[in-house]
Image 1 (spheres, helix red, strand yellow):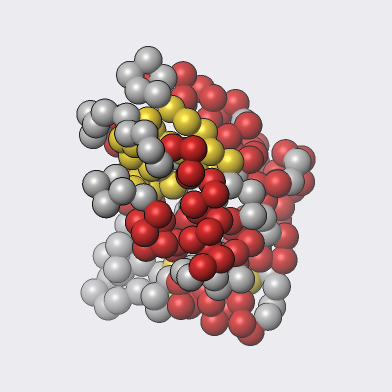
Image 2: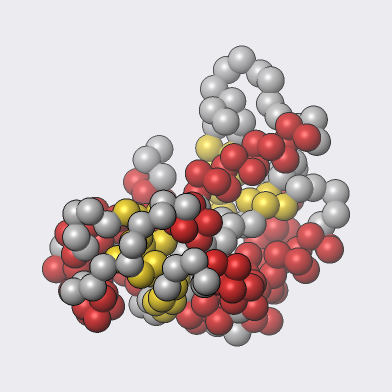
Length: 230
């Protein structure tokens, strides 16, 4: 959707969400949408697996006038690969603990062995700009070591931070291992929702991207632009 204008809000001051309790995440999610509504947004993507797991239903009940799109670990496309081995789901502790994930896992657990892998601390590394090098590779090796000698069908990145360390992850995994994240599916769902509601932008010129962050630290904003390749 290159013609759309995007407003991005990163809540680095309160990161990570994945180690907080559900009530905190719900309130922070309300705060984030209230901030975005000041910019008259026409739809909201909850680009956080943890916030989706904890708060998406409450958000949709409160903000009934705009489409709200969530994100969840991309188990379906991973299962549809029909590969042999374990399906490893890397995510925050809260995402893996919530009923939303357990319901999703039950849908596919008869088809493939699913291994939930909580990755507390990984978001903090990424928020600190540590995307490659010894520290992040050692973290990933320690997490994945019990599974490296067995067959891995795919690794699902169940947190929107994790795609930024994909290159480091590939150094740890077998080169044949597929890495999957749900961002493309989320973008397609957003486009469908905008089209169905008559909100898809028809202007001819390219859209803009504005980035805001609760930390208000220059280095955090610089990192956001770098990570989003803007």
